[in-house]
Length: 496
Image (cartoon, rainbow, N blue to C red; front, side):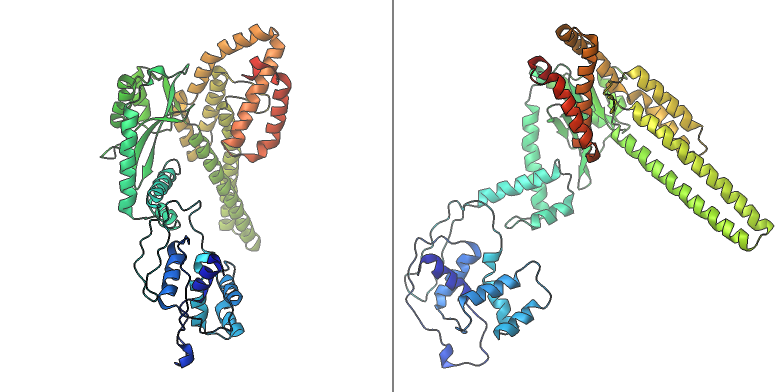
């Protein structure tokens, strides 16, 4: 019998449940065990082998074969096993349920996943010199450093960019064998790696950054209720700096020193930035750049808020329609002055809410269209003058809607309007040089417009599918790519 078969028998037959009555036939019979110094075992399998070697016993039920025991364990550990399976197995094999559990638990290592990859540095098992005496065997697994690295990697990738909070992170670590998941361990690893990252980032000199225009994205994320301020370069997605305020303050008084250090000490010469609608960002950029038009407010949250308000107005309109139907039903059963008054009031409220919803849905589409940089249908690259006119018309129209929530949204848009179209200003500054270059190469105004629009439309649809996960645009993306390839494929200048 080879080493693998011997080991399998050791694990499968070792330590069954006690018999119902003691018998001389149940005494273990000693046998010569071949010393297998070449065996490479680990974890629960190693413990089972050593325990078997200690007493060198034989199975108490020789009629239950090795195949039967593997079959029992396989059915027991089946993830989709039916309820009552242990009892059914006990009846089939004429065993007690305790014996079924013992057999299944003994063979469990064969049905449990271990960490992937080879086991590095695992020493050979040293068998005891005297039979029947189990000596303490020390095995160097060589996993300690790998487990530390895996745990650190899992924690950091779950936090950034995963955004996992403390309790879900503990659950994730609990699913990985051999990894600790205590709060102190998570905080220690996070603080240690954060300190290392901070030292590295503080030593970077950005003066040789090869970008024609440096913009930065700033935002804060939270871990266990504490804010972490991030500065990211959006093209390379490089983290330029971060800061964890001790007092949790996320105001301009905290952001400004962080950006000032990057600007003056590390020579990060940025010309503007992108951020969400937090109040701290506009005064921060105005103080650093001495200009009030260098901040682009994130339009994702604005579109989300507009869509949320439209759904609320729609639901209120449907409820008003239902209320009117109920009032009409009551009025038909008993027509009185009171019921007719309720019907008139319900109809007036229903008409107001329906008209408000219809008007807001139309004006919302204007706002969303005004925030576009490239037209999804034609590929036309927008300019700030046109989009700003459309945005102002939409804001003015919302202010006339007979609904307080719509008027409130109009006031909010009016205050945020100067920072909603900054990216079009940057686009207007960069496009002339590109158009000039394209004109010198093609020298055909109509062809230049077609090529530029096909490239812009493909870029915009690709962003819609990959970034926004709007998969319904995939057919349009495929069509746009085919059209773009028709004009630029095989041309080194246009493909660059």
